[in-house]
Image (cartoon, rainbow over the protein chains, first blue to last red):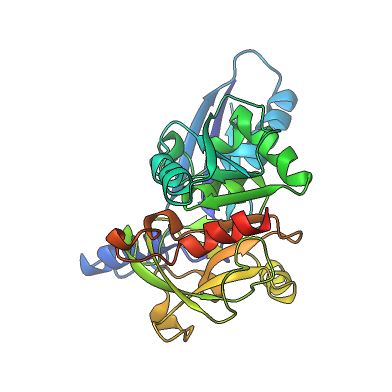
Length: 79
Length: 228
């Protein structure tokens, strides 16, 4: 089982890095870019566990370590 | 009065703190390796600045799971003193001993320079020797000091007088221009509700000797000594 975890700043939190990247893209002429959020991508190799077990564990990992839920939100894919 | 300065892999202000406590204030101080758990002989634990665990994942996120941190939480729960400076503040936020989180500086730049701080509350073990409204000149050195918390938490901090120092101009005026990193409410340092845990981004240990350009930081350490 493999988990892919995506962590980004919450919508309510200003992302200065995203803003800077957006500005650079717009300087390059990509004016259609309305917003950029820069985040983290984390891959976890989980070994042989069931999907429901994996789901439960990944949630705990995200809440306790992988994301800081004061400022960040997370989502994940399992396959 | 005994201080314990915690050393994480990547701490780099541990010796500065130890030097000020031991040689400038002439107080008893030990280094505490992050794998140690025995803190009972210490009155005040110092979490120093630096880049614990290389700031991997988020600042302070890994250090918070060091064995010593369990004991630091217990130490704080007993009402004993904890001060976290810069990365130490970030670790206190990650461990939940203080509310909120740090974002990258608004400018995205690492900022290393003297700033001015207005002391907002002197009824704490950490600021008791300062005067309310007094301006301290102490340097900052961080890339992630942009303090953030939700509106409800900010209200609570204000209501309980937990904001101990705010970024200000040399005359003590707290405004946007005096804010180096974008932190909400110009917050430079906060304490917990019980007032025994204090986290701040500026480095008082770098402003405790005249040769370094300011001795204002000593007020914070001397407050702790006087309290304990």
